[in-house]
Each structure stands twice: as structure tokens, then as C-alpha cells.
Image (cartoon, rainbow, N blue to C red; front, side):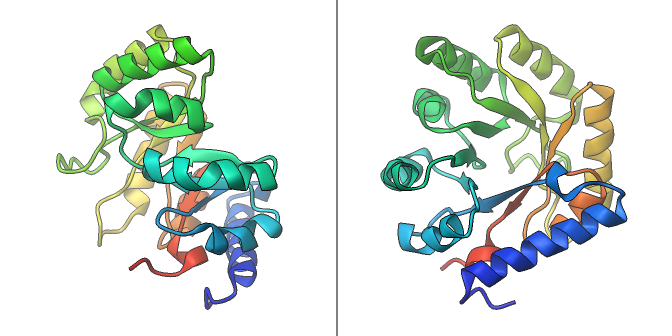
Length: 222
């Protein structure tokens, strides 16, 4: 599918999600498609907004702050997801701007987000990011440390709805998705943020509730 036509690309991705959901005996509306619009200007995003897409993902707080307030004014109902790593000193800005934060991965960030949420009286949903492939260079909490991080997040009144992970590149993603789903079940968490442009159909079949799709909708990034 050429992404020269964003509306057609959106329809194609939605159809693949629906097909994968059907194979797993799930309803298509049990999966939230997050259109990852990082590095993309407003004019590239607007066709998807016009087509009815309302969940969007950004990697950087400052970039999102520059382009989304005006878009949200023009297109009500947008849910903005922070899918990139978050520095603790940006926690307050993130809480003010985003509706969902996918990359909570360490105690210092839990503390910063808890303070920011108390200050702004605003509590975006949160995913705890798990280092599912044991790759220290990536963000994410080591699997062994997850119970303690989850306890700290709950003590800080963060609304933790699920887990997020990025499997290692150039490996079969399915075992990592299955492992994340098991860990989430073990901790009583329902939501799973997993799957990107190359593997979102597999993720849906293995229980993803949120898929983060950029390239398949917007084309490759420079």
C-alpha cells in the first residue's frame, strides 16, 4: 500500500487489524490504532484526522507541544499518546499535554509523574514499559524489577492500565508479545501496547489492545 494516499493507507491498516482480530476471536474495536505522527507536520496528519482517526502518538514532548494544540482545536476528540522515552524533567509538560503515557520505566519517573499529576489534577493513563528482550540500551524496566515498579506506581496513584514493550529488532516478535501478555495477566493488567508497522497483526493476534503504527500510515521517515 502506497502511503501517498494516507486515507487509503489508514483503511488498509484498519482492515488488517480487523482481520487479525477476527482470527483471534476478538472484536476489531478492542484494538486502538495509534497513528504515530512523530516528525510529521500538521499537513501530513490532517488527512487522517479528516478520515476520523483520533488516537495519535508522539515521541517528544516539545514536538507535540508545537503542533498539537492547534490540531486539537480544529479536530475535537483527539487522544494524544506519548510513545517515546520521557525524561523526568519533562514529566509536568507530558502530564499537561498527553492523555496516555506509554513509557513509564523507572522509579524516578514514577515519582516525577505522581507529583505532576497531583499538581495539575490530571491523571493520564499509563503503561509500564518492560525491557522484554533484555536490551539495556533500550528503555524499559527489567522484567525482574516490574513488581516493585508497579507497586511504586500504584502507591503514587498513577493510573497504570497495562504494559508496553518493543521486541528486539530483526527477531520473531511473537514470543516476546506472548511473554508480555503473560506478564500482564500475572499482574492483573488488561492493556497491552505492543506491535508496530512491521508486526502489528501478530501483536493483535496475541492480545495487543494498542498498536503503534507510523510507517505503514505515513511512509518512511527521513
